[in-house]
Image 1 (cartoon, rainbow, N blue to C red):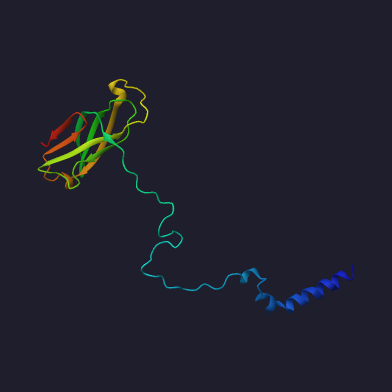
Image 2: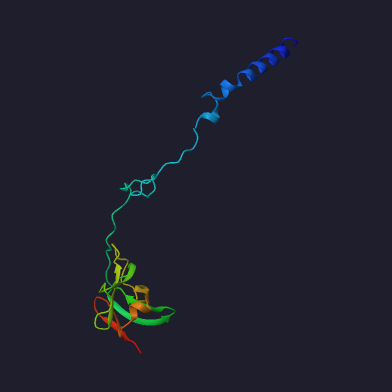
Length: 169
């Protein structure tokens, strides 16, 4: 016991005397990273450096596989602030249509005062059955702004076997 205490005191004094060398040593975890420095960012590349410029995991845009729904059974135009809501109910020939969309016939908008759409949906790969009309109904709505409705007198929605139109009052 008497030897342990002086040995600890001598060790502590030796380490205190070497403090300057140990403080700048690579053994000290505080020295593992250097000081921060400022770097100029290339103005041509303002993206995130961690995301590759050509994405390896990006998938090509999926092509919509929808086709015109069999019949249009109802078309309503409902006024909303800033535009109107086109609400359409279509009836498929079988049960199970999904991913329904109201696709514009003209990307430019109305032609001769007619805004035309086609109700499309993806047909199921395997048919569940024909079923009743209520089981085959599909409902879709699309908002159209006041700017898109400027000059429009008629809104028409087409299906595979019929179309419905509504006129502006």
